[in-house]
Image (cartoon, rainbow, N blue to C red):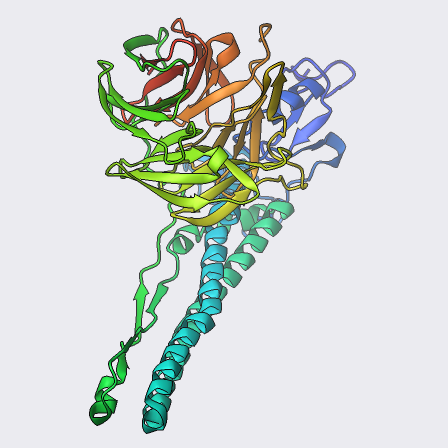
Length: 560
């Protein structure tokens, strides 16, 4: 009798081999009971497709071209094709290494799904972004060239009728350059649109292959993702400038002013790195016993944020208007006071080593460069809360609406808003609105620290959960604390990430740090005798810096 069948021929689960099966995973091609199906779906590393067993798809084996009565149910590894049993045992494939075709199909299917996911989440959105940028530039042409025309008109009015011919000549040149500018951008748009059409067709074909489960189509599929990772060339056009001159009737033509040449340059397109192509850092296992290697006394009455400038220098902000740069010996290296006199809401260090701070009560985001404060962003209707700097040197900022009812994350490049993340695919808020904590003396606002992970996920320490979205703003998961927690409720404060794509978040009320993997699976705690840990940061060597609110000390911890 088959070891996984009872006397009544009941089919059992492929995993536990004790309970009757109920479901079937079409990706992994295994049969599952109810409990094992739940565990199987919890593996977020793959797009599992679990269906009722009776609704499972049948595998489409194609007939052997050499043996019409045989189906190809074996895979020849040497020839990389499906073969029938006769070919494998007696034909031209005799002696070749063989494998199970369903295992091969599963691997191929997973590869197809990875290609589709990369096309949908990484490559195609970049093409959409490029197309949108070109359209934006085209929309601005009227304004920019209109200004040139106005400048020419104003100069012409000063010179009156004597220079009418010259005015018309210059306007004609502007129109010609504008036409060339538009032609160059239209050509670029056509190239991008053509590529996008090809991508849509490929994605459609991949989806059809995945639905058909056809072994022949799947085994002959050749990925073109590497071809599309190199984006089309990007056209850079420099709008001419107008240089008016002082009027001299004897030299009208010469002194009227000239237009700079129209410069149309085509840059090589960026290459989107595949997930496999992104260089992996050396593996650093977690220490069984993390240890404190340094303690910095900041001198604040309460300490909220810490941001690494280097391995031995950190910026801090606490319960006053002064931000301090300190070394590991607690020596003050420099200090900066906010422009408004308010307490800074949060701080971050840019890739260039400059300090950024948010001022919630002034509605501003400020850059400190060479000890000079520049307000780069002023908001209306929203207040900036917490900030981090990304690998691409953008700023990610959590925001709270003026009525305290909405929260979102905004990405800035310089002072330009590039992305706003607020709702999931069903239109529901991604982040909580429980921002106000009232007490007898008034109220305070909850924190909402954030950090970008190595895989470009955006990790936000929301009021009662860590909320992680991908680079496009799609929800990946929520972490609400370890299931075995029987202590105070999990309310994350500071959050940071390291070279291993770990997510570290401060569990302030329980005096510990949670370490998660990039998919939200709990790994372990860091205790190290912490006292109300708040802000977190990690330096380039993966040393963790923890700001303790009550003691106003920063602890440097080795945990890898």
